[in-house]
Length: 205
Image (cartoon, one colour):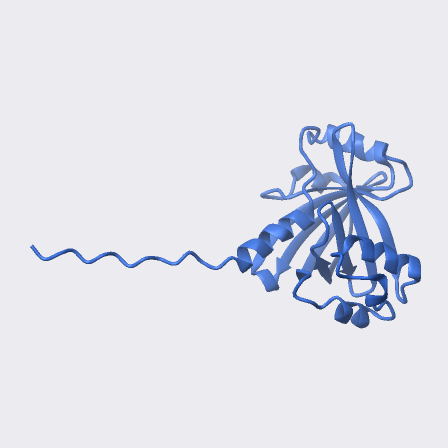
């Protein structure tokens, strides 16, 4: 069940910003760098704005798929936060391997080729309708040479989020995970191009 009080996020990757968002109360704009780590499927790990660590997971309730916050922690990270992070990392990582004293120490301790990761520039504008926040995010990933447009709907009230999506005609639309999109961008960026075979010369007549 989606329980009120927890932050839920429903994310889409549209071609353009939905027109109905222009009727919502406008909120602040911001631009931040996040560090995303490609961890266990169904989970997300990021260093948000260089200030806090966030762990998320995908949950489904009656066919309604959303992203649920598991951890939001600021530095220094305590043992419980470090354990939560370790639980979504590859098995080669142990809790004691993660340095949670400062953001830079955290980044350095996870800097290994076995853990795909990238910095993402998030240019965001927000708008509000009741308890629901609409976040329009233009994402730039220099490490993997890609850009994408994301529109996320966020609320601590699962019922309000459900109603909003139904009223906006998004009832049949499935949540798309940002980690899945980044995973595909990483795959494309790291796949060697297919070599082009030279044409065979024609035999002389």
